[in-house]
Length: 254
Image 1 (tube, rainbow, N blue to C red):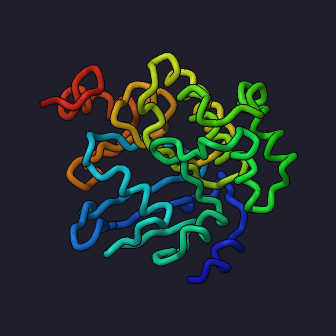
Image 2 (image 1 turned 45 degrees about the vertical axis):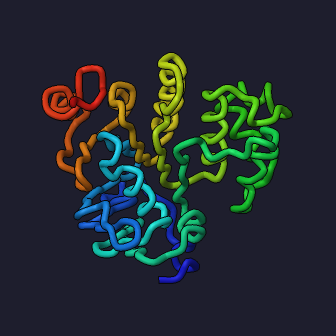
């Protein structure tokens, strides 16, 4: 399927039973080594899916497949009900798949405004990008001329989310939002995620630590050894994390 066909898909309908994004029996990895061994993930419109598990479980590789950065060696990747195996990353981005990567992915030597200008590649005007970004993250408006690398870690993460949301995506993929941040900052960021979710955006967010994300998720999965082992309600998954896979504080048990 060509990238052009993907970009011409109809707008997402929250009442449509078709998954926004679906991975079916996905195998993928690096070189000849598979990291994913049959991953199944289904994201519905306006749903927040929390994918949890320890380092090395395959979470980031799953997001890399879902954004087109890694092509699966087996299985089917579908977007809005259409198979998109082999479709280029930029075509998927124009179709509405947007990533907030681990480590934030901002340009530290550019100002906040210059970073936000990168979101205009989809055709959105800079005025609209600023309006959307500053309405959701007022602190960025105060720092619009500041060099991004001098922002706090939490503000940099806000900038990364603002830039992603400015493209008006259909699917938002967030990798380790809490990494390197103080708990009080993480709590604030997840409040932003909750607000974004209430606007109806479909979100997959991966975390090693479970507490904050389970408070805003609709469904959660536990990933171990390259497979999603359990899927259920956040409350049920929280019980399993504590009793079976992770310690009560969210850390992997030895």
